[in-house]
Amino acid sequence: MRPDRRRWLAGGAALAAGFALPARAAAPRVYHRGNDADPETLDPHKTSTVAEAHLLRDLFEGLLTYDNHGRIIPGIAESWTVSEDRLTYRFSLRPDGRWSNGEAVTAEDFLFSLRRILDPKTAAKYAEVLFPIRGAAAVQAGERPPEDLGVTAPDARTLEIALSEPVPYLLELLTHQTALPVHRPSLERWGDAFARPGHLVSNGPYALIDWIPNDRITLRKNPHHRDAAAIPIERVDVIPTPDIAAAVRRYAAGEIDSLSDLPADQIASLKARFGAQVQLGPGLGLLAIAVNLRKKPFDDVRVRRALSLAIDREFLGAAVWGETMAPAYSLCPPGLDHALPPPLLPGREDGPIEREEEAIRLLAEAGFGPGRPLTVEYRFNVTDNNRNTAIALADAWRGIGVETRFVSTDAKTHFAYLRDGGAFDLARISWIADYSDPQNFLFLLRTGNDGFNAGRWSNPAFDGLLARAAQERDVDRRARMLFDAETIVLDQLPWIPLLHYRSKALVSPRLHGVHPNIRNVAPTRYLRLDP
Image 1 (tube, rainbow, N blue to C red):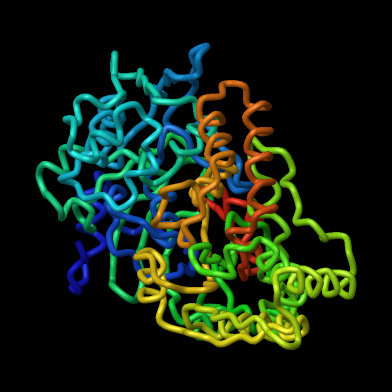
Image 2: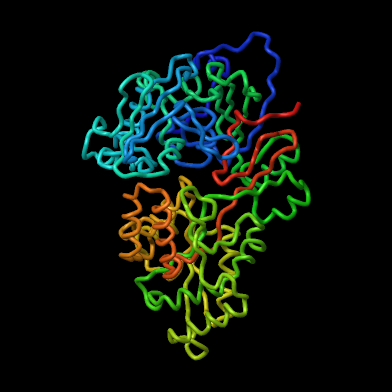
């Protein structure tokens, strides 16, 4: 549901949210927060983008939430216990949880909301994130009614969640926008319009006041939130910044206090201009080359290894991506939860000359050389950085006698082609994880996961490790299984890792409390503005 384009009056919205504006209140200190884009909706169960998640993190609060260091902390749940078999979680809700109209937040609110997002009638884009909950996949497929979902509310302050398999990342899933509660009376009164200004009742530290499409979304501190007195920033104007270059100019003019993205090709000049205001941090993302194992000679692991060895990942990260990406010698980025340090690609410690010589030797073994050069087609979705990456790859492969041609399309066409089993050779592929766990990267290459496993790689040993890890209750043993699974990937290279994503931001010296972290979160409630 897209909002209509008329302006919603701030005062009316405030009254509908359950509080009135003081008649002669002093002008509040306003945080002008740049955000990647306007949301399609503020209905948590119908959102799917990072830009929407940034807004929902201020408007709503799940059973658990994040602080400004990216740590998982209690939200509406003040405590929880886990059964010995790790299949049942029992959450005790805070007695002071409140909606923005003053009503109490109860376990029934979460029960209703989890059933709603998994109900196929909701048409949620992201419901599969919650599939570890018992019965979730069957409910979402319409095979079982929502009432069969493995969630119960024994009383107003107790919620129980039963799992189909033990997943150590369940608590992080419950911070995700898919697990946020919605206010049932508002939904029943307003239908799809319940998420508009004047109608939206939320339970987070901020409430929705106004929404001017393509201009700003205004939030004001929710006086009913339990920590309202300790939240320094009274008002937030969230400004969509799809044109990053224009957003940087607005930042320089003092119109925006922070930006959540930066143009990669301008990082050096931005650092020279703004110094420490440019903040780069770790990220939960991977850029890789998918290899089509259904086509010869790409079914030969020697060819895949040769192509990987020739790539200068440091050059890609520094020169092409302006240090906004980090060299990737593993599928999983370092620093994930419930994980060992990831295994590294063979040849990681060798110099460029040694790697190039080994690549040429492998190609010769596979039947390629000066008299019979290998020709590859590399497909990618068009952006300046992606085009420059393609050129750098072709240059690196030229050094080992490989000839490269390009096919480039828009992103929608590119990813649909891969998803539909197109007959590519090599293709750009990327992934931003939903939670900090190796499983959220490794599952992409599971047999049958054709939506992501574009090259249709299948390895029984790899699949077996993922299956056993899914049933393993010991976190350390599970981490070892996932490490071993990733080792198989790096040996066989169905995907060739290139770069790991980094968060990148501009943060004004007057804004305090932003700490770069792997989850790229900075909830406004923990930030502070100088006058």
